[in-house]
Amino acid sequence: MDKDESWAVIDDVRVTVADLLEALDDDGWASPSWCDGWTVRDVGAHLSMAATMGTLETIRWVVAARGSFDRMIDLATRDRGKRPTTTIVAELRGTVGSRRLAPTTTWRDPLIDALVHSQDIARPLGRDLPLPPEAAREAVEWVWQRRAPFHPERALAGLRLVATDTGWTRGEGDEVRGETGELLLLSTGRPMSALGLDGPGVATLDARGPR
Image (cartoon, rainbow, N blue to C red; front, top):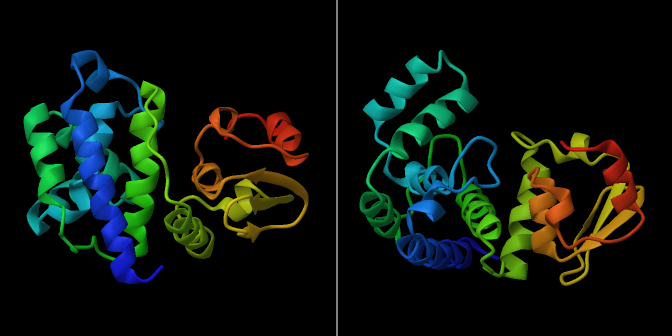
């Protein structure tokens, strides 16, 4: 995929997730997501953050987090998650068409955010949001190339990931097979037991336990 195609997918996902969030009741908003410690509400608020957070807000949370990037993201996300649900949905809809990037990121990073966080919201709620295979391939390749913050080369060492729909592969060892979107979720630390995977490498992952 090229940059323009990627942004088109990001916009589609933003609209789809905004529609999903808008239809939720209070229990849905408060449900745990696949992001550890974050509710669906938090993830919904996080999805608009990179495109809307200004310099002063960024500095505020960097100072509060004492320079820790991960803590800064967590603090800012939880704070934004306190906003009214109508505001969270409106902010996400307002990012459609935006090409604004967070510092140090490229156009592939919001693609990862959109694809993975859409599943963080949808799957615990039992909703089906298909992941476009070619977009998932672009995203998972960038996850492996960039390494941080997920470091799949360490977490999935000794395994060979094989995409059954796009032909994408990575790693050496026992095979773990699945659709590219499932391998993207695996590579970003989502719960392996909830993914549609097979192959001898699945038993290896089971033996390693939760990541």
